[in-house]
Amino acid sequence: DADVTQTPRNRITKTGKRIMLECSQTKGHDRMYWYRQDPGLGLRLIYYSFDVKDINKGEISDGYSVSRQAQAKFSLSLESAIPNQTALYFCATSDDGPGTLTQYFGPGTRLTVL
Amino acid sequence: GEDVEQSLFLSVREGDSSVINCTYTDSSSTYLYWYKQEPGAGLQLLTYIFSNMDMKQDQRLTVLLNKKDKHLSLRIADTQTGDSAIYFCAEAPSWGKFQFGAGTQVVVTP
Image (cartoon, rainbow over all chains, first blue to last red):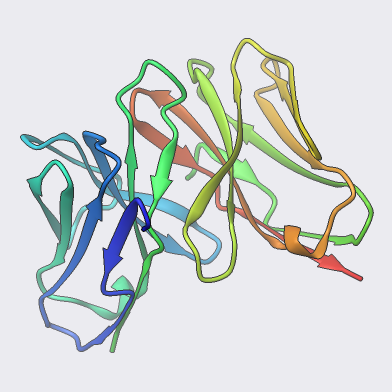
């Protein structure tokens, strides 16, 4: 089984709808992240969480919110989806260090907002 | 990632060596990383280098780090069609906050 899973894998929705993307991990990591990927822009950090009670905004948090329901679960919500939120969304986890701080990525959710 | 820059595209013939270059800005980064993304998949760690090293070799992969110029490169020897992917350079200037480059699309031609 995959260590980091995301649901759904694909989603098409309409402008103005509320959408939730879910992420679960079995790696036992405290740190979890949400990124979006756009062609030519690489990965941009939306939100990150260093433990269940810690939530931090990334570089592009406007229009998004998150919930850390448990160590293993980190959800991303689009309160009112708009077309420029069409992108590939990745969840990731990492250990706390010291060490390499490797990030482990989920398979991604492709979101299309019409 | 505006602080990590890499070229967007590289075409290479099968069997040749590929070299992907990256520049970063934060000299406090302890580790620098190369991730690989295959079509339809998430990113997977390919290799990393500790900041006090100049070079790291791992089978067909060679990572070179020039701290003075803040330049990182990844060399893939004997490039194969399975190496076709997007390669991301990343730094972690503070604990847990990664900065990724835009990714280099590598296309391997027969």
